[in-house]
Image (cartoon, rainbow, N blue to C red; front, side):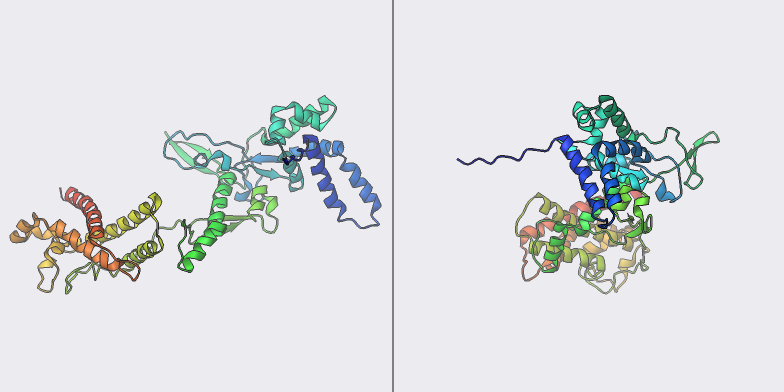
Length: 433
C-alpha cells in the first residue's frame, strides 16, 4: 500500500530566513554585473541577524491602525488609532462593530519604505503570525530570532510595539474637527478619523459582488436567458474618491491595496417626478390600464415573470424572493390607491367613470360622506371582489409561452392582495379617526 509522505513544514527560523533571502534576491536582480561593491554590501545587510536588528529599529517608523488621519488631508500629522471593535453602547447603531472582526484587516501607516517590516510581521508558522508571537513573547519566536535571548526579547518588544502608536494623542491643524453640543452650553471637540479597516472590508465585499466569478457567471447566464443558482448585487451611481495620487502607499498599506480608491455609495434622496393625480375615468379597471401600465409595475411584473420562467426548482430562498416581488407589486397597487384618494371625494360619481363598483370603493372612499347609497354599499364585501379582479389581472400579466396559471395561483394572488389591502385599510381608518 502506497502512502503519501507529507513534506516537512519549514521551521519558523527557516521561514524567516527564506523571507529575508527573497527580499535580498529581488534587490540583487536589479544590480548590474559591475556593481560588485553594492552586491557585497547588500549581502552583508541582509544577513538574518543584521536585517532583523535593522527591522527592530525601523518598526518604529510604522504603526498598525484601524482609523487614520491622512485621507482627511495628505499632510495631516495627527494621531492614528488601532481600535478593535466592541459592542455598541446604544443598540441599533451601525459601525465598525457591525462587521465580523475576522473580516477587519489592520492597516499600516508611516514610512512606506518600512512596509517590508510589516510583511515580515505577517509571516505565519503553525497558524500564528510573527506579530502575534511577538506580543506573546513565545519561546519559539525568541529561539528563531537570535541565540542571544536578551537580544531576542528586545526585538520582540520592538515588534509588538507596532500597534502602540504615539503616546501623546493629538489632532492637527490640517485634520477635520467639529464641535458637538452636550448641553449646558458645553461641547466636545471631535476629531473624526477615516475608518480604513471598515472601508476596506466594505470595498472587498463590493469588489467581489461586482467582479467575482460567481457574479460574472450569474450576469452572463441572465444575458443568455439561462437559469442561475444565485443572484448578484449591483451598486449604481458609485463615486470614486482618490487618495495619494500616483503614490497611494504614502497614505497607507490598505489604501495601496485599494489602488488609492475609496468607493462612495450614492446617498442622494430619490428624485420624485410625480405627475398631478388624475381620476381614472373612461376605463373599466385600473389594473390593466392606469396602474398596470406604470413603468414600475411593468418592471416588477417582468422581473417576476423572468424569474419564474428560469426557475425550475423550489426552495426557501426562491419562495422568499417570489413572495417579496409579489408583495412589492401589491404595495404599488395601494400606493396608487393612496394617490387617487388624494383627489376631491366624489370623483367616481362622474358619468365618465366606468370602474367596477369594487374599484370605486377602493379608490374613492371619501364619497361615503357625500352619497348615502354609496355609504351603505361601502360596508359590503367589495374587498373580496377587488382581490378577485387583482388576481385575474395578475394571472394574465404574468402569462407567457412558458408560463400558465390556474385557480390555485389565482387564490394565492388574491390572498396576498387581501393581506396588503387589510393593512392599507387599517392605516386609512387610523388617519380618518
